[in-house]
Image (cartoon, rainbow, N blue to C red; front, side, top):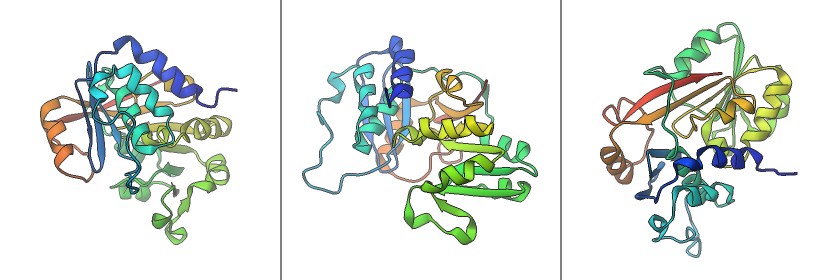
Length: 250
């Protein structure tokens, strides 16, 4: 059984746009790969051991973006982030422009049970309209059951009772995406994958996603400079000249 079939399918679907990587940036919060297009992914983990180095560090621009995409299979989260950004660098995002998926969730989630996989900023609008809102978090320091922020291990209990599930695209990095999508499909939950890490690729619809909410990089040079020099969330208020929202539906 191929436990990384989704990743393999994403690589196969996008590698036709593979070129030699022009630039690779691993910032505090975001990773970017510049290939045919500019692709983004969350910097999911940072090395804390002196012996932990990214594979082929310093020579990544000697590889094609398809070769770097294979890094997504790594259990080193920094390498996996490079892999996801490389996949995204081979995709020209399409769909509606300027539509924030969080606004859509607030609209369709009215009086529904909504579950977020990953703690997103500015979800109070969703919370105010939803009947119930749960957040599943891998980071134990963010878990707060009194605020319905539960550990990721609660997925098998919470998702089957949810009407809408919103999944961070970075779940591809920690390899939990395929399992979560199976839970959503079995539960018949309306499923949205969102965030700058999200591959805007039809393959995700084949695995049960109903909507994709990602970004398109419109100013590559400026974006690379900003993520290299700072951390924080990548949003159109701070990166207003660098990114635009994109929304695709099944």
